[in-house]
Length: 168
Image (tube, rainbow, N blue to C red; front, side):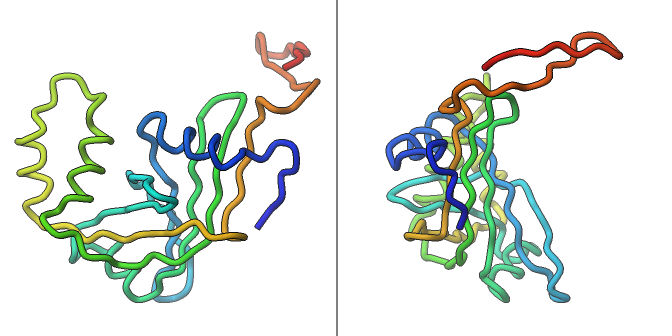
């Protein structure tokens, strides 16, 4: 995996980034013909693992069972950018009582004002859920935090046709 040197997050910084607020992961999985398909998926990050869920008979679940190789990208959508990249295997795991699934959905949805968690879960879980775990292992992930960069010049658009230089 890549080495971003001084921009790399420590393990503590990376865990904080992955758990500070709900984010989606861009999950790349492989179709039958070998071509990649990227899907936005909610996740739960615990104990160095990403837990991803899908209905058992959905295309995502079928793809991961057929070929568990995946790539994940979790990132901010503004500057300065922070991101984590992972290349690993999605292992289907048991989820007794849907405990992992419920923790993931509560974490992802707690910030949504006025949501009726019970009604949401009844509806969302009515199809059942499969849980796939992607583990962080030495060498299968990389991270970058642009706030660690010093004296980065970037161009900032101000008005159409104009550019201004800013130091971050």
